[in-house]
Image (cartoon, rainbow, N blue to C red; front, side):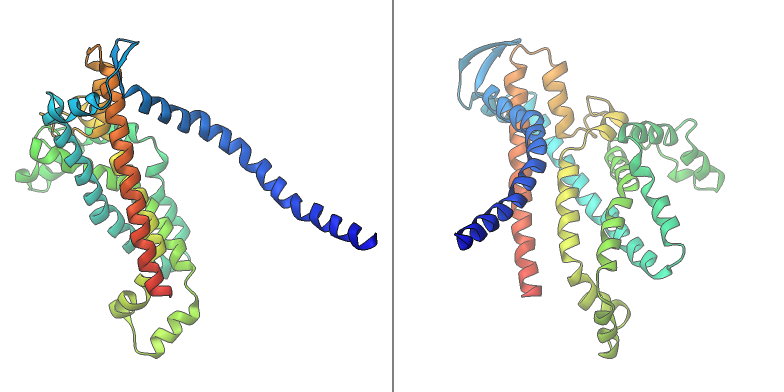
Length: 314
């Protein structure tokens, strides 16, 4: 009887962590189901029906998806907006994340003033992106913006351009503004990853003659691969979902001449500004298309980076 009592107590004690963990997970699961999963399933179902305003019509299968690929204005607006999202991602990887990594490496070495500079670089992304976009639209104004005023004052009149009014420069302005605001995010992640590298690894590398760029390329960078993967995936998701800054710069139409249009703006126009009686179906199809692309690429990137980590860490 005593042995059975001990086994019973062990089972009851073993079940307590499971029950405790479940109790903590259930509220998050409820919130996820209500605000993420249910709208997602609803949008998926809406995309398979015809609509007359808010009145659901007949089941039409993939017709809404065919429409956004073949019918105007989607046949031109969709590739244009999608290419701008990809450009935002590429620009963030080249400028935002590269400079963020450089800042993380520099701040990791300076010591006492590190916290001050980390705070300075992370402050912009604590501000609403919509506010940041409006502030930069004022700063880049060709009439009174301080950027062009400064360029003219130092004798660089040829660089004082209508940054947001020229289709060739407007999207690059958004790339710059986005990188400026979010540069502190990769900097913090890379800084945390650098702080997690054991001192013994750096000491062993120096003993073996690895210093400077060679040490960073052969030792530090491979150890940063998990952080690099996280930053890459989050950057991709953020770039594909970009809305506040493009909206603040170019409005809902992606001005000038669609040069700042992105997928979220195209969805917004289709759902709320098009005046089309079937906009619920087509906008839901756009939303699902964007979700499936983001989800698929994020999963593929995670698998690719996991394979790279296994090669490095065995």
